[in-house]
Image (cartoon, rainbow, N blue to C red; front, side, top):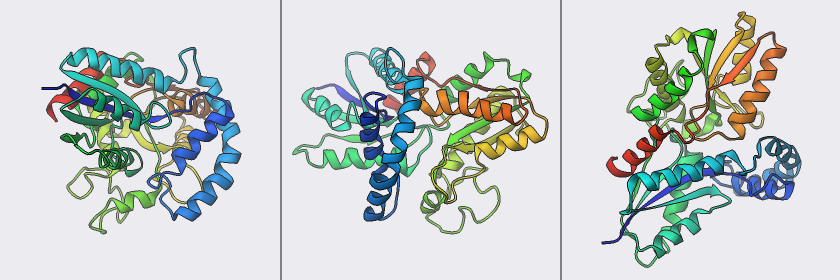
Length: 338
């Protein structure tokens, strides 16, 4: 029999930090109907007429600040993760890496698996918490591409791994390097989403945003809710570290536009904590498994400077899962057992 195919998919990154490549990346990313889920005509006007032309030079400048000799941190660590997983699983498996946007593309990765005559394909979107705009988008594109194959092998997907014990343990171990007790408060800052995308995931229509703290506990009703899964991730990491609920806050960053996004916003939480006299903050970004623009720059630089301007002293980022062998064990478990 042939090898078993494993497809790892992360979000993506420009091919270079230059404006032309950032434009191409943002255009593909933001034109995704699951990312900006509005009518196609309005989305095209917004993305191609406003966001990409005006945002690309600014985003390019930010990418240049984090771009290293090996390129984008996200792609660099994703390649390492794929190779480490290949080594962990051995010769009976064929591991491919893809990015949902730009390169290496999902289409090319699937073509490599097809050429390798794999007997099955296991798709692992590298997003711990499920969101339609990330995991859902990966699943949709993979299914669309595979639907064109004359022979479709057995295919399975990992929906989320927000509560995987090894993922939780790895985040906690990374935090323990920084003497958690020396900080005044802990932030779990997740990438934001428009509130309307959370509402779409509530198939009952009677739970999401209908009462306070609707995401605090994971239930059958909100089990696919990005915010509820994020709260669960934070709760589990805090428990691993022995942190009480009063010692940490779940918040959401990277808001785009003026419509309501998932709250509280990280910037508002920084203002509140500074007003309370907090000086040193330890920040997790548990929506990402590899350091990227949102962690290396947005938290480490922007939020740190914002907090200092408010009277705080320091916002310190807990590094992402990156090349930690324990995370590779988690990926192997997802490939083999879930």
